[in-house]
Amino acid sequence: MTTLSTSTPYSFEAEHAVLGGLILDNQTWDLIAGVLTESDFFQFNNRQLFKLIRELSERSEPFDVITISELAMQREMGSQEFLAYVGEICLNTPSTANIEAYRDIVRERSQLRRLIKIGHDCTRLASSKEAVSEDVREEIERELFTLSSESASNFTDLRAVMLEVIDEVDFAVQNNISLLGLDTGLIDLNNLTGGWFTGLNILAARPSMGKTGLCLRFIQAALDTLPKEQTVQFYSLEMPSKQIAYRLAALIGKLNMQKLRSGKLDDEGWAKLAAAVAKINELRDRLVIDDDSHMNPSKLRSKARRAARQFGKPGLIVVDYLQLMHSSQKRENRNLEVAEISGGLKALSKEMDCPVIALSQLNRSVENRPNKRPNNSDLRDSGSLEQDADLIMFIYRDEYYNEDSDEKGIAEIILGKNRNGPTGVVRAAFIPDQIRFDNLNYANMEGGRG
Image 1 (cartoon, rainbow, N blue to C red):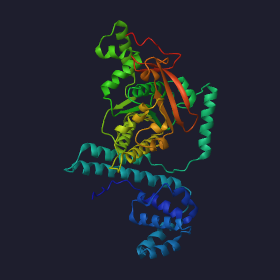
Image 2: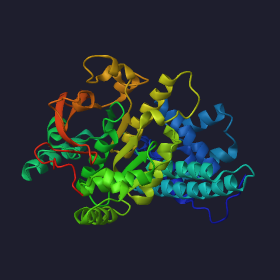
Image 3: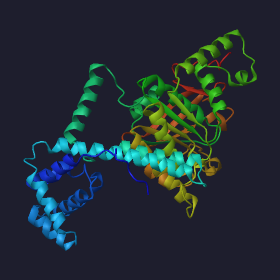
Image 4: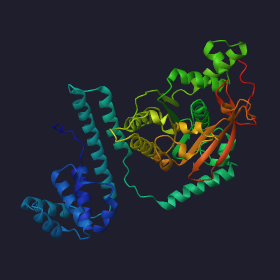
């Protein structure tokens, strides 16, 4: 056990003022409960006294010197020294006037002590013969994020939330903004969904339908829309980062992908590539790409927290794709694994307060029926995806199945579920040479001459 140094942060005076204030006026408990716990008090007797007060409060009994003394005797804590200590605290607390300020001091000192402990934990874990640096980092990051994300209260002030709603609606009206969510980059999809909102969004399709291409279109629009201090986190379990870079260059530069990869660009193509690279470089650390193929919900959460601290709060998180993730522990079957993964992604969205888009595979049974447009029952591995998702989208391109299709260059984005709005189908342009999705009335249908 590590011994704390004499410079350990604490304030006996503030701790005494809080405890004495609680005893003087029991109604001040509401100002303290949910903010402080016994572990926030440095001195042992203070922790014990707070524990007794909390127990009496939970029993809806008054807490004063007498009731505290009685309970202390029942708990075999009632030594003469302890009872005298309680009496001394009461005598030395003149009023409850500044109890909230004293509470905050106690809380702050407690936070500093926990930071010191995390430092000791880091030293202890890293010094172990069995230490693995990644495991140590993940544990310390978890402790740090837990510390930084703790809130004094989990209660929602409905009036404050409603004011935020009114402000957002008023801002949209005053600025002629029809989109309250994050821009998807596709006008018709925006009209149907209102944009991206905090929650779990599933984008599913059979292979070669363009899941990653559409996903990169969403990322491009998000980066163009979000405030400069916000980021997009892209976790690519399937595609290495270099391949993503090629895709981004083709998307932003509207370049023929095959010509780009082979280096067969004309002068116009090279100019487009240079402009695309310059635009990508301007993003700096706003697009965070992680191509670790060994990912589970716990590891993803740890990485997302680390990226949020290092690069800025995410406005969008994308995972490509869900079925390549593994559960944090062994499960009886794959359905239970996917249930854990989808639940973890939904919890991540709530924790980071941003939309999460998870790409997903579909069952092969789609290929065995005349109408190959997918629906919710085609989601692979688990019905929990349908339950956890706030929005489910599918991609269907008729030209993929029918060479003589009248819908060449057109993709259907099918909304199978929309928790906060209607379902339906929107159409978008698909430029296969560029693996690019765009608005039908805007797309460059030439296929990228560069």
